[in-house]
Amino acid sequence: MTHDIHPGFSVRYFQQEQDFEDDGRPVVGVVVALWSPKLSYVTAQFIHDLTMQAVNTIRELGGRPLVVDSSAPTLQQRGTSWQDDVDAFVFLGGADVHPGFYSNVDLAEEIPWIDAKADKFCLDSIGRAVHEDRPVLGICRGSQLLNVSQGGTLVNHIDGHRVDLGDGNMGFMDEKVELVPDSQIAEILGGAGTIGVRSAHHQTVETPGAGLTVSAYAHDNSIEAIEHTDKQWVIGLQWHPEEASANVDHRRHIFQSLITQAREQHQAVKQPALQR
Image (cartoon, rainbow, N blue to C red):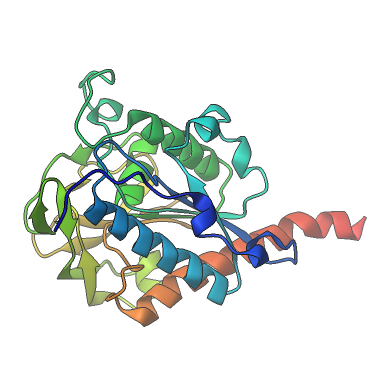
């Protein structure tokens, strides 16, 4: 197994011609850092597989995926303008969030594998999406970014939720999580109770941000899911429904709910114009 540096992927690798056909399908921005400092071949392969599964699922369920590379300097310079015509957002996993965004650590401090510029891009994008009440799904790192964007904090390290492959690489493991009764994610997945998930993380939410509430816990009572109580569809999951061995029904239910919400909100915005 090699741990040499990987150059990363291009967004073009994940897109198809049909993704750019303006045919009424809701546009779902899939935000992922396709490069990070010291990106290894192992981690790059994980990023590739998870991103590909996410975009394929979105297509299958009636959405138009738009892959957005949060590590691209030219895109970072555009701020949040890229999301003007995006109906929903999925923020995928990846490197840790720089602790300078949620603690007294200096943001100028360089930390291995962390890209603070990509973090800033994502935090600004999530902040705008939540403010505008757009549907947002945060997965693993995406859930942590969601929490930090709303003023929450993170646990810097937690054991027992990943397979450690060494050299900063993580592997997936099976895990049980408990869905909170009456939560949105429990409703999406058929009710409260214990479900099996695929996890690969060593950080998680510590203090939920403004408007966020806990909707799932792990076996050690660590936070596994959050959702916004004042918005229509804003959910963060610490586990990976888009991982190849994850429950397929769960994956489809989660992404279908996101896409349905995006379609309904998009139609609601257009409806007044049609009535004039």
